[in-house]
Image: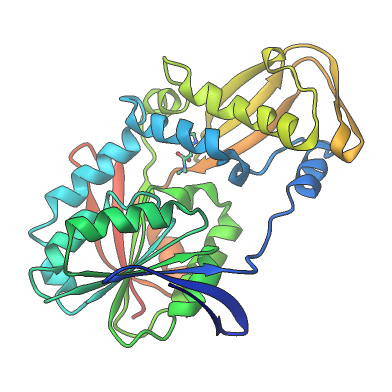
Length: 339
Ligand code: AVI
């Protein structure tokens, strides 16, 4: 059954997909303007493509493949931490009956949290927020697995979704896994933390996954794997521009580059032009010139030290309740509270 509802002057379609599962989909989501953002980035002196555009259907599939690669340790380390701390979770979360997940995707990591919370609560409320319709599929699967999970899936941008949940009665844990926080630059990262903090009541918690600074060789291999999956993920941006903006990028004429910038503590991904060339985007009537060796930056993936994490926590008014790390200290899960 479908209903149209209005919350905070936005319209949503509300659909029940099971006894304990409701989906809310924004009817007027804030749209990204692909054409103008791509035109802007490709006409700068230092060319760039915003990394949020990696995730069309093919890019999302390639990203899932990346997560399964041995070299891409991030997913495995975060899961290792979650599984290791399961018995400790009740100490921190026993009063919390609601979980809000940003960028929930397939909700695989959150399962550890549910198992622990359900030991103390007869039922747990789960609010996955994701811009993609994957929320429906993963919610249906979760419902079969956890009968005591009451799911309200929100298909919208994080910020808008969080606004809907700002005033939940239950004490909530907001989770943001996968180190996507690293893809923000420092200013956007702080803004993001402030917006999370503004949606939290005094006993709410925020659990954040962050990738740590480590041996450069380990870092660079994670972003330049031996099977070339990350290379294809990077090049897919050009294929997407070709398909959606009528471009004539020849993918063969670009090299995938991924390196650690030690000054900024970040992996940078670029697409480097192998030759001097011109590319035309018919859909936006734009001619782009590239010199041999010129690069288009496609992603920053910041890595943090514990010291930096403590600094950003205090800058954004958060208190750190706990930092968990995997055995090799590659990755950290940080638990923040508002005081
Ligand atoms: C989504 N994000 C956390 C990934 C990262 O590691 O920065 C995206 C990615 N880029 C290349 N490989 C994976």
